Amino acid sequence: NKRVVLKQRPKGVPQKEDFEVNFEPLHLNLKQGEILVKVEWISADPTQLVWISGMKSYMPPIKLEETVRALGVGIIINSHSPGYKVGTYVSGLLGWQEYCKIHVSKVEKIPTAVKPSLYLGIFGMTGLTAYVSIKLLGKVKKKQVVVISTAAGAVGSVAIQIAKAQGCKVIGITGSDEKVQWLKDLGIYGVINYKTDNVASVLRNMCPEGVDMYLDNVGGEILDAVLMNAKKGSRMILCGAIQSYGLKKPQPVYMYPLVISKSIKMKGFIISDYQDKYEEAIHYLSKLHKKGELVYKEDIVEGLENAYQALKKLSTGGNQGKMLIRVLHE
Ligand code: NDP
Image (tube, rainbow, N blue to C red):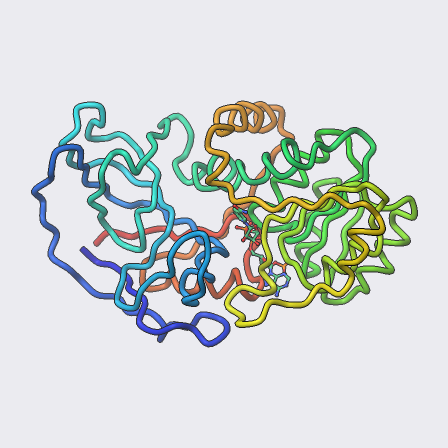
């Protein structure tokens, strides 16, 4: 079983030498309730930047010499559980490896009608996160101004399309001209490049009436810029803080007193607490996708030895849409 372990904690952006590809013997004997999964796709997620940094989070850090923890999808090739037949696709924390022996209580079956990688993207944790942020917690309404950071990323690009479908005036914030163009092509109201524009002043010009809802994936100075433009009684859904991932000290948010003076409602969340909303999210997202109102991009890194590049891309803004690793079996 080829796998990738964490060799050392990255200093800043993850590099090749922070990981090691090695092989372990694959024991084919399964205990009751276990399955052997051939991993096909691995999700690259910003939360892994926190897990490999050693910092405390909602899950323990990945230890040195441990297989890198990651969500994945794969096909069952051996089973010791009657409900989980060989040939069924499942998703779960399968890790950076070719094969994963896992108990069925830790996986979800996925339908084979749709391509499996979508169960890491628009129909997976990514789509669910966007749905919970915008519909459930953000409670967006028609004509409201909705601002979304990391807008051309996996969660962001689904979130902007949900907000657009709800009839909102959607403004996306992203970090390159190419991504700006993609977001403009998706037909949203406005796009800001935070690397070249002054976010606070461009936002002021785009929506002098103020922001009703902000989906924050970044924290730090971009959150400050939105706070300055927030309406009284607006909502801020704190989904991620990628500006601070892996840093010992989080980026400061100087404008937080505005939360008080503008009676802003801030709500953070972890998507694993909303598994019970998965069915309604999938129903909504599938309908949107069928209507052609939910398009997606996949950014694919090939092979486990290149998996580190996926994390590198996430932390440098190199990805457009869902960042994935395709596992190549020799
Ligand atoms: P993305 O596909 O959006 O990739 C990450 C993007 O973050 C990069 O492409 C880059 O885009 C941007 N970025 C990287 N570094 C910085 C920085 N220093 N400042 C500003 N932007 C930066 O990833 P996901 O869609 O998977 O995740 C997006 C966010 O959602 C993350 O913060 C993640 O932690 C969060 N999340 C939270 C969940 C929860 O349960 N609360 C669940 C899933 C995701 P750009 O070009 O715009 O800079």
